Length: 95
Image (tube, rainbow, N blue to C red):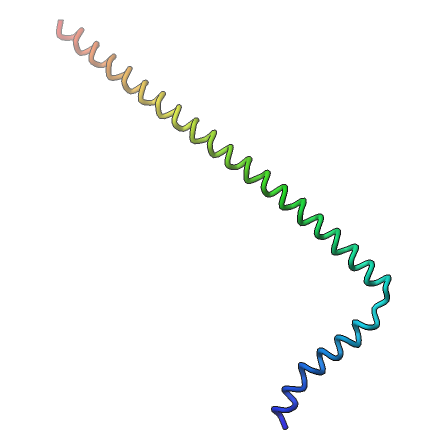
């Protein structure tokens, strides 16, 4: 008996949903379709914004990498200049 009742519950739920769904007026359906279309356009706009943001983030990442490379080159040049200055100073002390 219990098993039969458990099997009947999903069938009753589907039947109840069909009955309730059949009561919706065409204006309700039109309103829901309009809302769905609005949500779809919102999703498309969000996807476009997301893609634009991703492109901007990628460009910023490339710019940051280039800046880091330039900073590294400047640091190496400064180190080389400091080393040269130290060598010249040591050489002047020997004279």
